[in-house]
Each structure stands twice: as structure tokens, then as C-alpha cells.
Amino acid sequence: MAELRPHHRAVDRIAEILEAVVTERTGLTLTQLALRLHAPVSSVQKLVNGLVAVGYLEEDGKRFRLGAAPYLLAMRSGQRLVSTVNHADLVDLFNRTGLSAVLAVRTGDTSVYADWAGTDDPFNYLTVQQLRTPLPETAVGRVLLAYMPDRERHELVAARYPDDRGSALALLTELSRVREAGYTMGDSGPMLRGVASVAAPVWEHGMVVGAVALAGPHDLAVEKLPALVDVLLEDLRRYARRRVN
Image 1 (cartoon, helix red, strand yellow):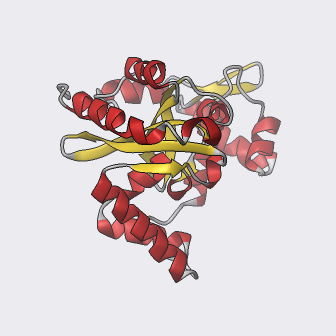
Image 2: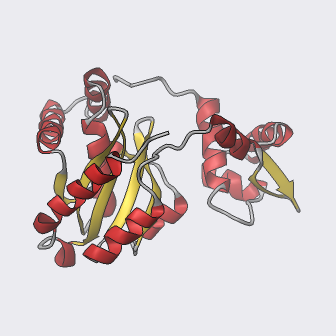
């Protein structure tokens, strides 16, 4: 099976621990973490002890939550994943269109909702939990996948459909259409069934750094979307003209 990069079991497990505790303000116990990760408590405890030792987790009353180290890394980098789209922009899009506005970024071979406005179920499950979603399974994910370098895009599609050439070619054809049009419109995908959306890329420094979507329940949103394509694209062009640090 082709892969963008080989996964490492310990690294994946550490990432799962951090992503689990970040969604729980009161933290998680070792038992809860083990259940979330479907892993033995003993193996989770070793990793948790190491993460506490270096400040990536902190313990309070036998519950573990995110420590200071990740915040310090983010502050010292002086970087934002997306500099030209802010929360007020998403609120404005929601107020003008009546549809949820979400910003997604790529994390490896998945996407994560980084910010949002006006969301409702089923978006809240993905946004509040900050779940990683395979790129092909949502509109924003397919936009991010469409603008990946050719080799990485082909490898990721091949990894998703190792024994189904027809499905791989169909997805590559769809991604080519996304690049030609500059957006995707229609059903969001299998992760958000019953949701229709229009999604387009966020450009900074000549690169796609994220994707913004307007979305809502299919019956309410699908007829609105064609008229909102130009609204979304014009706003993204306006955002792109802002000074990027």
C-alpha cells in the first residue's frame, strides 16, 4: 500500500493521547485514556508519564490535561496556520449567508476544523472534538487534497484505494475539477452525510494553507450554494490581499 509517510506506532499513540486530552477541559484519567485509545492502561501510563515529565501533559487529581509545552512551542514559532482568515470573517460569512462557516487545515493525510461559526450538528461533533478526518471524506478535505503536490496527491489516493483503480481514478478526476474551478460544491461527503457545502482554498505566499466552507443541511443549503460560490470566492480573494506576516 502506498503511503505519504510511514506511520510510527509510538508517535501515533502520543498524538492520540494529546488529541484526546485537548478536547476535555477537566482532563482524562488513565483508564479513560486507555479506553479512548483501545490500549492497555500499562502502555498508556508509560507514555503519559513521559509526556508529563517534559511538560506536554500535566496531572491534577489523577486526571491529565494538556500541559504548557505545546502552547510555548506555538508562541515561540510566531506562526499561525492561517494568517489571513480570522474568526470574525467566519462570523461575517455565517451572518450574511445563514450557513455554517468553517476553516479547515491539513494535518498529514487528514483535515481538522481549526475554527468555525454558526455550526450545528453534525458539525459540532467534529469541531468540538477536533477530530482528524481523512481528506477525501469532506468538502474541505478534498479541496486540501486537490492542491497537494502531484506526487503526494497520487500516493494518498493510491493508499486509500489500493485495490480499486476505478475509485482512485474517479477521485483524481474530481480533484482535477476542483483545481480547474477553484472550488467544490455539493454533498460534503461520507463524514458529514446529509450536509451540502461549497468549499474553496485559502492561499498565502502562493500556497494553499487551508480551506473554508459554507455548509448546512442538504434540504436547506443545496439551493443556496450556486449563488454563494461568488460570495465565498470574493471573500477569500479579499482575505488573501491582507498582509501576511
